[in-house]
Length: 280
Image 1 (tube, one colour):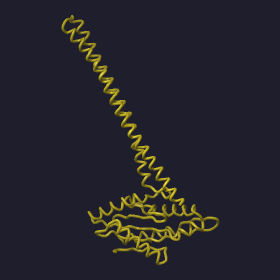
Image 2 (image 1 turned 180 degrees about the horizontal axis):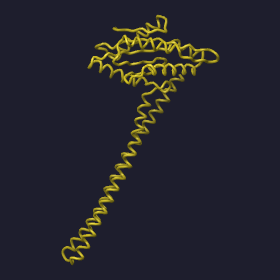
Image 3 (image 1 turned 60 degrees about the vertical axis):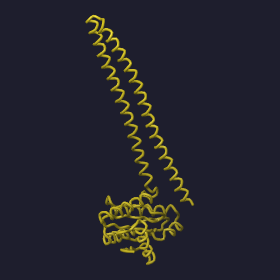
């Protein structure tokens, strides 16, 4: 229940932050509209000044002496230059201010988007981000016939670790496992996510089943070297791994079901091992 409450509270906080940022963005747009309206009013005032100067010049052109006309022409030119410079400076300042506001909000929105895709405890991608990446991977596989494998990792006896040593130790185990997985799968195309509970999923693009099996074996060895000590007792970390390749015609569901079946087989065979599944 505590975990559910934490997740609900976190999701609520993320949603509130997103709404706040979007509200700020709407405010910037409103400020832009107000500035534009102000700019138009300012330009109307400036145009009025120019029109008044032109009217005076027109009257002088009809009845004044050349010297007075020359003086008024010069005055009109100066006024026109002044109005144009004022308008240019005002526009430059408003565009700069708006650009700064939009840049800051764009950065906040980007951070918010990334935060919404990351699991708080492990700092891995979350289930929503995983689902999107898995779908895109299948699309690439269908179009380009790329090899792709899905690896499901389950921490062995995780409930017993929580029951025996407490949830803080369980959280520490999950963080260390997540760190170990991310240090092994470092390619840009490797995607590591917390699938749920003590399960971690890895999507491996352009990777054959044989290569994935080798990586799974290497991962198991790395996980066995994790050292966690609590109250003088060494907490052993072991994991089971299920691997399935993407086949032609797969959906996200059928691919995940095959990887889950491989993971189930690894658990049933005694845990602390990897099982691969080529076809359903």
